[in-house]
Structure formats: structure tokens, C-alpha cells
Length: 123
Image (cartoon, rainbow, N blue to C red):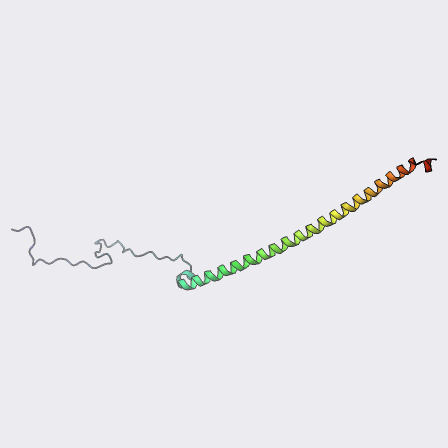
């Protein structure tokens, strides 16, 4: 007479699963966590501390390399500047000697003209 089942009715037991219930469809496979097979073995096997140690080593090596490159560049720049200074000094010296020779020739020509104007020579 009651439409509700009585207390003595047995319920069908379902097999337990990770979600607490199982599908009744036999062709459905149970899902599991994704396997990350594309990760490199070094990442899979090494611990975090080991990876951080490797990172520190590589950063130290890079820093040393950049310092060495900077030193080499600074030395090359210094050499270039010294060479340019020497060239400038040599050019300046050459120019001054040229100007002095020119001035000497002008002065000699002036003296010759002046000498030709005197009464002693012209008479």
C-alpha cells in the first residue's frame, strides 16, 4: 500500500571508484591523471635543490663570461684610444713643422725683398 520501500529492502551495491561511483557503461574507461611524458628526464628525476644548484652554477659562469668579455672590450677600447692619441700627436707635430717651414720660407722671401730695397744694395 505504501509507495515507499520498507526498511527491509536490500539496495544494490555499486563498485567503488575514485569518484565514489562507477559508470554502468562497460566500454567507458576510467579517467586518470595526465602522464607528462614530454618532460625531460633531468626534470623528472632531479630534485628542486639540485636544479637550483645547477641554475646557480650556470648563472655564475655566465656572469664570469660577461665580466671577461667586458674586460677584453675595455682593453681593446683603451688600446684604440692610445693609438688615436699617438696619431693625433704625430699629425699635430707634422702640421706644426710644416707651418714652421712655411713661415721660414715666407720670412726669407720677405727679407730678400726688404734687402733689395735698401740703398746699400741698390746703390
